[in-house]
Every structure is written in C-alpha cells, then in structure tokens.
Image (cartoon, rainbow, N blue to C red; front, side, top):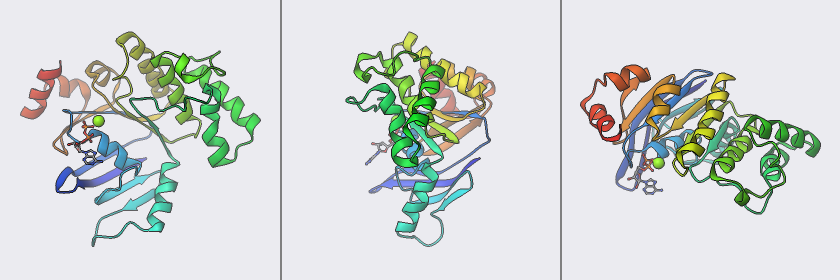
Length: 250
Ligand code: ADP
Ligand code: MG
C-alpha cells in the first residue's frame, strides 16, 4: 500500500538521503533504526512530503508523486498531489505537537472539522471512541499540558487516527518519555498493529523494534544498509555497519 523508490534528498551540498526505497504491505509494522543524523526523520518527512524529495517516487494508496526524470520544478499540481497523498498519512512526532490552548477533544476533532467538513457531533463521537481506544477515557475536556507525556502522545495518536489514515508514521514517539510511560504508547501501537493498521516507526527502542515489527530497516548515511526480519537482523546482522550499530545501542 506504500511504495517509495530511490528517495534522494540534499540540503545544500549535503546529501542526506541517497536513494532510499521501501515497500510496505497493508497491516505491516516496519521499524526504521540507525545512528543519529543518518536521515531517518528526513525520510519519514519525505514520505508524507513535508520535505520535497529531489528524486524518487512515492506512492501511497495509489496516489503517486514521481520526481524522477529531468529535474522538475515543484509545481502547484505537485503540491495538490502531495495534499492528496498526505490525506492518507497520519504523523506522530517525538514532541507530541498538540495545540496547548485546545482541549484534548478539540485537538482530535479539529482536522476532521476543518479539512473534511465532518459534522461536529459525528467528529466528537469518533473522537471519544478513539480516546477510549488509546486509553484516554475521561480526558476529553482537559488541556494537553495537564496530561502526562505518555497521555499527550496517545492523544496525538488519537488525533492522527481521527483523519482515518491508511498509514501511520511515527518519528521517535517514545524518545521524550520515561520507560514506563513509553510502554503505554508502545502498547497502543501494538494494539493498532493487531487491528490491522499499517505503521512505520522510527525508533531508538530496539526491544520494541525487535519484538513488535514485521520488518526492520537499518539506515546509515542516507542508505538502507540492511533490511529484514527483526529476529534475523538482531541475532545475525549481515553487514558490519549494522553489527557495529547494534553493538553500540544494545
Ligand atoms: P535522523 O532523524 O536520522 O537523526 P535527520 O533526518 O534528522 O536524521 O537528519 C539527517 C541530516 O540532515 C543531519 O545531518 C541533519 O543535520 C540534516 N538536516 C535535516 N534537516 C535539515 C534541514 N532542514 N536543513 C539542513 N539540514 C538538515
Ligand atoms: Mg530524527
């Protein structure tokens, strides 16, 4: 349901991604690991076109953006296509990014109201179900900063889910959290996996990457060095760089 081919991205003279490809089947949970600065966040941001890739192709749910061929300008038509593509993608950041002056419920219904013109009553009903689902029953009328970090992150997940995305992208969703609180967030992601959601997770949490993923991608210097079954990769990394990285973090 998601295909990325040869994604390249430079900032000035610094090539951060040098042709990263990824195929994700519906319902898969794919973890992306790799050293700090290797391009993980940039890749996720390219996938939903928060960054414009210089080269490569991205297709999500049949909506395609192709940057290959003669170097093309980013046109208004590309931006419209990017907008269509983003409608299928939910994104969760390390820093939660909730609106602090809106209640949890308002945070969750905001985009469905504004972007999809869902009637308020219907959006509210869906939001309450989602808040239940992520274990936040009873927090609808609270303000984000009165919640724990783990609760805020789960609210951010509910907010992303409210747009009914086909795929969820997470950029280090638990890095700002204490381990026991992180676990509540990971449990939600496992539950979503169980329910069939397609998810791509950039994570430092190697235990989660190994136990919960269908597949792991190891990125280094803007390239996929190794990709495969988590148990195989963690037990028997085939590339020396993967071996070194895993040794440094495990
Ligand atoms: P990771 O998430 O793996 O830690 P990033 O994708 O955030 O890595 O960053 C990869 C490299 O790209 C880093 O060297 C970073 O400094 C650089 N970079 C990221 N975003 C920008 C930007 N907007 N402008 C310039 N350089 C950037
Ligand atoms: Mg990052």
